Image (cartoon, rainbow, N blue to C red):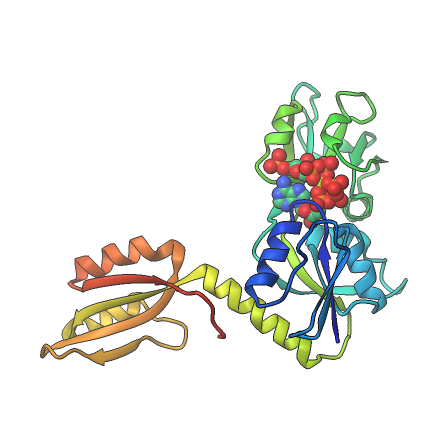
Length: 288
Ligand SMILES: Nc1ncnc2c1ncn2[C@@H]1O[C@H](COP(=O)(O)OP(=O)(O)OP(=O)(O)O)[C@@H](O)[C@H]1O
Ligand SMILES: O=P(O)(O)OC[C@H]1O[C@H](OP(=O)(O)OP(=O)(O)O)[C@H](O)[C@@H]1O
Ligand SMILES: [Mg+2]
């Protein structure tokens, strides 16, 4: 039986369960359920705090889990100090960066100026590693959440926190300083060095299928044969485009997968080139 950890709360919770449902796995009906068994796939899902997921996976108690890259790094022991979980694949949601920010009027404008200052964070391990690697000596103030308020309430001079849109920072009168400490998104994690088993390989293929179906569309168009080399250079597909003859002499039909965000640019360029009957179709599911 495969045992999978899924975030029970927070921003990763819903999209993680949605991605597993789209991958054909049964998910819990109520947010109060702690675990659910999917008999068809012989898989049990455990709903846990995202912060704890890599710990269970590293210990080998659960086979795989979905968490944030920042959470994995926060709960990873220093080299040689205990079992490790490792990133298997990114899942394309829950994107954020982990960054320093200081009050607008603090005069702290660069990471170097953080030396000797108090920095509040809910990710002390990641922050302390960064400070040690950068040779900056500062006091780390460990908080559980709502870190942005720490400066206003006088317990810190700056913060290091998760930023997505930046709205929370702005509301707290803070501005980002320096480059991101790290870029995070939801990831699938496994125990480091764990042997590949068929059930995990299947889960990975299914998740990859959902990712590809979300990212790509199918583009069909009709094209005069003499323009095929230029048209198919625009739409090379994954392995190569499908080109079949049309009943109209001198014309072919082309089908290729293209990135969804590129669709309108490609349709315009193909039209300018002389392609016609350009159609876009969504991909519901796939195995690539
Ligand atoms: N606004 C956001 N946008 C994208 N990802 C986010 C955002 N906030 C948090 N995350 C990501 O979600 C993961 C877990 O954060 P979450 O807020 O769910 O847990 P937490 O902060 O430990 O718990 P809680 O907020 O319930 O106290 C982290 O990987 C983090 O990067
Ligand atoms: O840049 P934004 O789009 O504003 O998003 C970032 C905010 O979202 C998360 O907060 P969450 O709601 O998880 O609260 P928490 O700080 O208590 O964890 C994170 O800790 C930031 O505060
Ligand atoms: Mg949070």
